[in-house]
Length: 285
Ligand SMILES: NC(=O)c1ccc[n+]([C@@H]2O[C@H](COP(=O)([O-])OP(=O)(O)OC[C@H]3O[C@@H](n4cnc5c(N)ncnc54)[C@H](O)[C@@H]3O)[C@@H](O)[C@H]2O)c1
Image 1 (cartoon, rainbow, N blue to C red):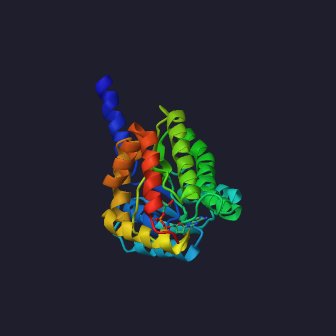
Image 2: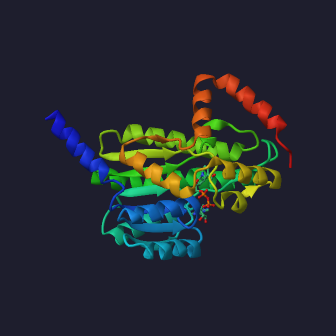
Image 3: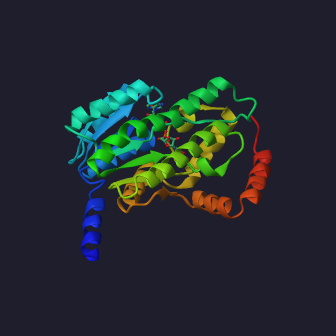
């Protein structure tokens, strides 16, 4: 009996990212676009949501060039609670029922200023998209998946959620919140048939550094680090979907992210002192 249950569970999880009925936020660029295309390659139907309708439509046009999968674009600002509620309605209409996978990916970059100089307008902007956007996505879509008793949620956090890098407080706080939310959700959904995964990359080459509110010096450094990091958005998306299929909660895809993760867990106070030292050595804008 135990063996049969394991086989049934394996079959169920294997299918999670294959032929998915997926909602991807921030699907018009970078990691979100890579998720949408990879899901389509796996035979999925993807509702590509983005604040920028043209970018979302471009992603759908790319999906249409693939031999498998289908896509549909929709404009949605995830920092708008009503817009995310509407997205859930549109998803149910598009799929003829609940989606099987929701990827709360939309996010923006912010950095280069220390606490005290960030300003509340920038705090509100960053937390509104990066944290509240994911809160809305989880709050609105979780009941649909829980009632269906299957599927999954992937939240895109960042290694910033645990790295506490100086001059990135608003981003760090938003991503730490996404990690905590994902961990809580995973505990709450344990045994429900719905899997939760949280993605925590360091630097990936996308538009996040140029489109956000990052000071010029920090933007240059981030772009340089993204060039060195070695993992493309496509690679990160595929690895995350595979990890989700095997039921993994945390995806820490790069070596530097993994080193930071272990240092912080095992030597938290020493780590923070080290981060402070590195922060003082970095160029100021
Ligand atoms: N690129 C990296 O180095 C990196 C590292 C760690 C985490 N992340 C996270 O990955 C996610 C995707 O970022 P990316 O690197 O692909 O960036 P990106 O800028 O290439 O793509 C982000 C997409 O989100 C959309 N977007 C922005 N604000 C939105 C809103 N309010 N509502 C809906 N869509 C919105 C943008 O239009 C864009 O299409 C983000 O959550 C980001 O914080 C990125």
